[in-house]
Image (cartoon, rainbow, N blue to C red):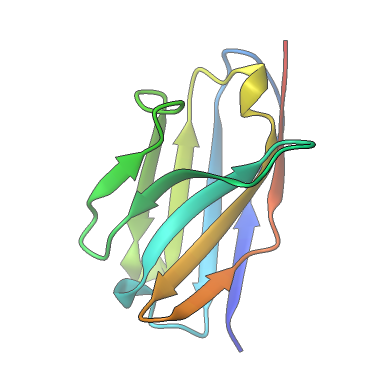
Length: 115
């Protein structure tokens, strides 16, 4: 049974930081591209950042320079360090893992940034 479990969300003031985690089980984590998405209230889900098996990272322009994606293959865990948070970063953050037509999602973790 495949599970992706996010944690680390919460309420933070603008300018603050949070670190999200996504821990996977039931997959060979090191062979998956891992991705963070988010969905703000009333908006479509949007891509935030991706990291390849080898650790190459890409970011949406809206978070570049503020967020850092990383992974620890030994712990089957992906992270998202979020700094200089803005109210527009508010939403449910989802982790995704995919490879060769396999696609798995976590249940999401809420991030709320107050102004």
